[in-house]
Length: 436
Image (cartoon, rainbow, N blue to C red; front, side, top):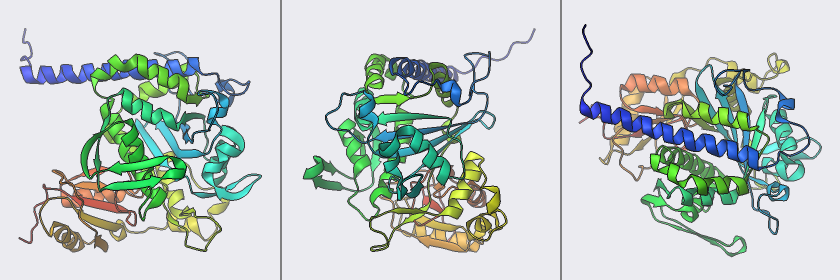
C-alpha cells in the first residue's frame, strides 16, 4: 500500500496553530453569544420566533436557514441609570451597522450608516437617523431602516452601550491600529480629551475610544465611520489570538452589563458560528455614500445619502431591489440601472510605497489602461508592502477590474480610502513603475 508522504514539520505546525486559533475563537464567541442571550431579558413580551424563524430545524446546532439581517446599534451613554437596565439602552445611537449574513454565498456584508444621516422617521418627520432609538426604541429604529432603505427586512437587533467598547478592548489586551495623523481635541462639556500620535500603536480601551470619537477635522462624523471600520478590522484580527480564551470570564461580565438583543440563544450562537467559518476576505464593509450638507442648507448639519448609490449597495450587498414603482420612473434608480462603464469609475491614487512620485506614476498608468477619472491625493503616511484597492463606495466589480488590469494588489472591502472616490488605490512597494 502507498502512503502519502508526511507533511513537512513547518506545515504541520502551521496547520496546528490555525486549528488551535479558530477553535479558541469558536469557544469564546459561542460562549459569549449564549451568555448574552441567557443573561439579558428580551424586551417586550414576544419571543424572537414571532419575527420569523432564521434557523433550520434539526442539523448541528441548527444552522442558518436563510440570509439574515441584523441591526447593530452602539448607544450613547444615558446618565444616572442602572447599567444593563432597559433605560441604559434608550439613548441616541452613536453607531449604526446593518449586517447581512448569507449562508449560501458564505459572506457577511456590513453597511455603516453615519449617525447624522437625514431620514424620514415615521410619525416624526425628517431628522437624523440616530434619533430613532431615542424616540421609539429598536422597533422604531427597525421601521426607519425599512422605510428609508427600500423595505429591507430587519430580522433581529443588537444594542450595545458605548462603554462596552472600551471595556472589551481592555479585556483583550488592546488593539493594534495605525493612527494616520496626530489627533488632539478637548471638549470640557463632554469630558472628552483626545491625544493620539501618528503611527502604529497598540491602543487600550480609552485610546481606542478616542480614536473612534475624534471629529476635529474636515471629515467630521464620516471620518469617525472610517475609523470605526478600521477598529472592526483590528478587533477581528485580535480575536484570532488563542490567548483570548483565558479572558473569557471577564468578557462574559462585559456582555451581561452592556448588551441588549432580541436574538435567542440558539440564534446568536448560530450567527457567531457562521461568522467564524468565514475568512476575512468574505467580510465586506461599506459606508452609506452621500455628502455633507452645506452651511445654511438645513437648520442642522446632516449626511445626505446618495439615493442612487444606496440602491446599488442594497442590491449588490443585501439583495434588496428598489420598490417596483421606482423602476418606471426617471431619477435615482435610472442612474443605478444605467450601464456606466467601470472605466469611468472615480479612482483616487494614494502613494504608500515610501518612494516619491509613485502615486503620479500609477495615475498615468491607469489612464493608459483606459480609466478615465483618476486623480492623486496626499501620500498615505504609512508604508505598505502590498497595494490596496479599497472599495470606497461598494463597487466590487470595478475594484476587481482594476486588480486584474494592474496584476498586483488586493481588494479591500471597506470604506477607509479617500472620501470623494469610488475606489482608492493605495500604492504599495509591490508596484514597479514602468516610467523609471
